[in-house]
Image 1 (tube, rainbow, N blue to C red):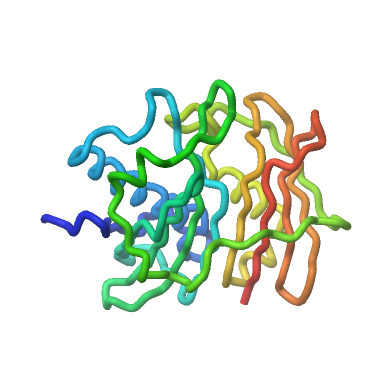
Image 2: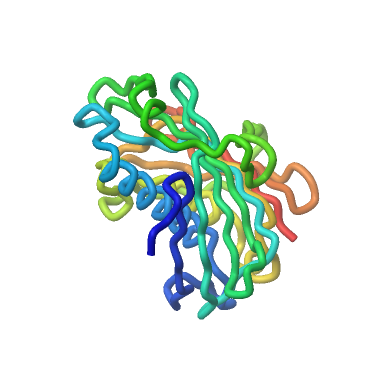
Length: 247
């Protein structure tokens, strides 16, 4: 089915491996749907208009902010709609709406992306993308750009993980969903069983390396509101920050 060039949709079945112990859609599965839909959209635009990036350069997500209005469940059928909200000199902004089989919006998100040279690690200008990319500047999923996450100052929980081969994606770096998964593991089983995520805000700051050790830490800031961080143990640098709110 033909789609408008500036807006792209993908349909997803919530499969058994996408659901948690209560049969609810995992936050990591939702984020996988978002990034897969973004990739499909970008791929289709490149097919129509030609390559936009210099060979070897890659897209990297810098910020993600999502609002979950209703938690989807196993066997639900979802539609993810995505579009470019605008492209600046070095940052691109992409939004998403997620609807259920009845057309009700169950989640919305906004993301900020940059293009990186993986050899030099330098952020690249987006002029070549802006010249070809169809924008929807008047269409906004949550009414703002993704914000800045608060630092963890006094962590009450810390968990350590080894960065595994399975956490790398086709761009040969740790996929952004892995950082969300590590943060999510700072919460107890009992808390996650009895609460649902209401909002998440993630800032991606520095790449984790294969074989390295990372610490995921968490600090409660208010009732059902938590700051999280992923810290590279070898250097002490933050790889990512997050804010989770629950209901």
